[in-house]
Image (tube, rainbow, N blue to C red; front, side):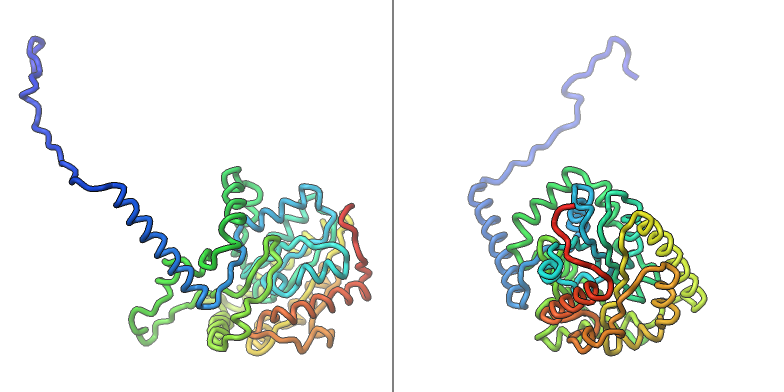
Length: 364
């Protein structure tokens, strides 16, 4: 221990070492790095352009929140669409606008039950328009709320997040094909088959890109699914993975899940009807093995019929209308872009003819 009279001498300090930077031209280094970045950027973009990818707006939670916010910013009187990917892909906003004189607010989300969106709208007194609810039985009656975070994004989105979404939609999404989660480098690497699959090991394939989207979330099936038979077969093979019940889910558990979703739907629809909001359920088309699996796991008499009876809301099931049948679904679950326009036109005429949905102006 040092005494009060002792002092610390510089010579007692441990020696220090300094590493001399090599004599390099930093300007040249930065130029080479920038050049390599540009080359990599261009090659990655060209790779996906060659694959047939066109620029498209991303179906992000931020994009959904942007459309959801419109209801509380003076457009609560408009028609709103919720559901899963079939409503998102199959109902074309320009056709609806041509028939009814208004462009709906598209709030459907792919790969998820719309129950959370239904409850959110039911609790929002600013929503006074019309509501179309798409039903994809395996999603709706299982309560698979994969995209529920979108509502949380709308409620809690910060100014920085809104700015980022705006800049993304302004500067990136309309111009770059690679700017999609399906083409992120780590996503591409993850789905490569680096070694042979061992016997008895099941590798789940993630859903690949299916659609192209506009700024207001008007969405259509990606053309590659219509023209590329190999890519179409890949999509079908991914759907086949979903036909069997999830591991550990017994028939009794599935029944309880369906009952819970029905109770949630009944409560939400009651709130909307008390506020004077017309509610319409829609069962869009499916075909092939997908329809067979849906009819087996979620038969109409135990799902669709019960939903209409207990909510007291009307519904349009594609099997009840010849004009909604015979349309092309390249991968069994979604209409081709051209047939989606035909479907929307015919759907609007049914709504007009049988349910009194007349044209609405763009103002309350």
